[in-house]
Amino acid sequence: MKRRLLYITALLVILIIITSSAYGQSSTLDKLMAKTWEYQYPAGYDNSTSVKTKYSCCIQTTILYGRIGGEYGTLDQSFYLSDNIETEFDDSKVGKNQNGRYLVVKGTHEMLKISVFEILKLDVTEFKIKSVENSPIISTFKAVP
Image (tube, rainbow, N blue to C red; front, side, top):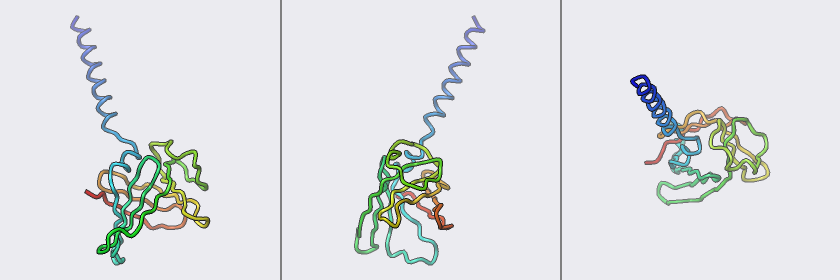
């Protein structure tokens, strides 16, 4: 009887640990959607504008604000997450992956059909990406409270 109770108790403890660790994790998409992200200008750059980005299931919304004049404009672009570097935007992948190492954004015109960014860091306060196409520059975003 004691041995059986010990096995049941051990099983319950294991189930509690597994369940609590599973609920503590969130997907890359959940982390992106949880916040509004404000671009952090590198030192020495003109920061007379503020750039904020929001994510929904399928759309990246970028809003440009003037420090004095308010909102200048909004740009909505489809995106998806991928574990591979993409060379063409695949509309069928939009909204399919919850996780991925790369943020793949649909371009806005014929010259720029796709933008691919490696996600370097994503937590509750900071989001860092680097373009895989041509720029070694790391873009940093901070969560807006």
